Length: 257
Image (cartoon, rainbow, N blue to C red; front, top):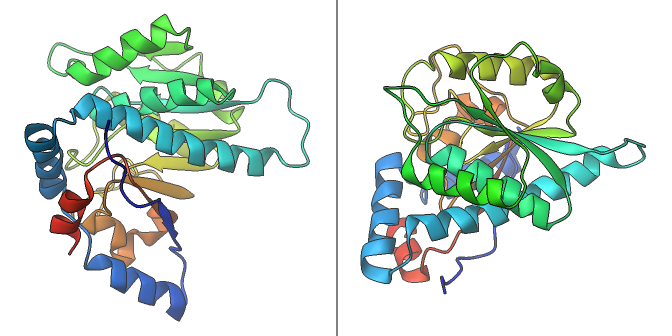
């Protein structure tokens, strides 16, 4: 069984001396996307904790936060059949998104998954395929999207949106379906929870190329990413939360020291 890291702690991303001091303190413990991949590889090679296990842990952690924030949004409102929309890309970030939707179902919160359709040059990643199979077997509502004419209202009617479109491996301008996903998320007016990193934001530098998600919350996995702590990224990151997903403590300390 994977050993759990420290309980996830929120990091205020607003202005003010207090939050700036916290940001400066946590910057010393941030990692690049390459370092995070290295951590995951070591986790499997030395500790026997697979990437799929980490993905399952990520889904449970993010689901707990999403449920908390959804309840805040629903407070004092009477909404029939509330649901969380989960927008997923083709890679491991999308796999984390489906794992989150599955965990939400176990927490009795309805979700609707919108998954970017694969292409010849951009197929689904193996772990995403496994999550997709598990989600379908569990009766999860999953729409594979290759056009956007019929479901834009689904985002507008959601309690909140989980952005699981582009992860730490994404660099440069989002393309094709990703651009349309991001624009629809922004246009929806619904609060957005970014999974690991807001889509369109470079997790190493914090910069964007003009197409990006502005999240109210970002739940980043394992350790904070360097770009999320840059002053110019704060308005896109929103409230930054670091969620432990099962990396052994000694591994966390070796990168966070």
